[in-house]
Image: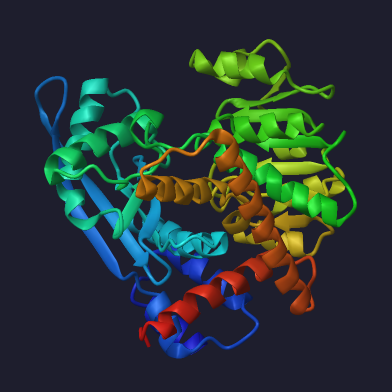
Length: 428
């Protein structure tokens, strides 16, 4: 396996994120991966790149790159978000699409893995500029997607507004009203509960772990990074379950209240577009990372690489017992290694933040049936999916003789599903 891995990755020496992600994944497996399967899993099935010209408010033509990485379709139509951010490049998208393939496999829903987007920055743009960019982006992308081919969703910089503009453009270009995008407005096929899904799902899987160790969220001190949808709804559900959310953050720093934050006040503050440093309802800290706050449970819900080895050591010293990833790859490799040497229980993102794509899969299902599920129906299915993911990765970790290594359990379960489907379809 190592010879094949090194040979393939040597072709992409500049793709540091992709190299790290694939090496981490395959080195976690406790068996020798078949070389042919490995070779194929190290290559995306299809990579689409295209230019996106658009006219700004001053009438000047601007140009960005658009991408879609259709990584693996063995388990179903390609599925994964579209990200609009200046940081977007092929290395990041290949990495996220690789991870998405295995995350989707854990849900049990028929979905392959993909990721896409553009280096377009929606911040500071007018609504008209964003609409024009989305429409021009879809002029090219529509050739490569469809309800049974590839179903993109939103991601960083792509919310309900952007999905709506792209859906409208797709409909006009193809003369077809189909569930080709998820994260849509409820008025034209979106799923109730999609906004809450990742945050709620994160708490459902944490609850499943807590039940296993004969505990619950009642009275637990919870620290959550971020203040976007994932963080807000994770906090809402944690508080509803009796937890005490004592710290939350944004780019400016974090707010802290040992007695528990007033979540609605934070939501109202952020809706005004204000940073947490101007929030007066709790102590604001910017000189220390949020992970220096003593807590029982840490939920990184902000961005990639936000927790390093030093943060893990601080969390362990301060009594943290569980870390569950609400964001994509928020722990560095060194941080993950440090967890393995600690007593902290760790739920990796491919399992813990699968709630969003799970409800995207539910939205695909309701679109195919031409019906609308109630919030309760969606939430019930979401909870069942997250609990099923936990049971699968826990049982597999036990079978491997490492009962608390949920990362290894998740990787083994996901790999087995994808590899079996590839072989059964004659991919090797």
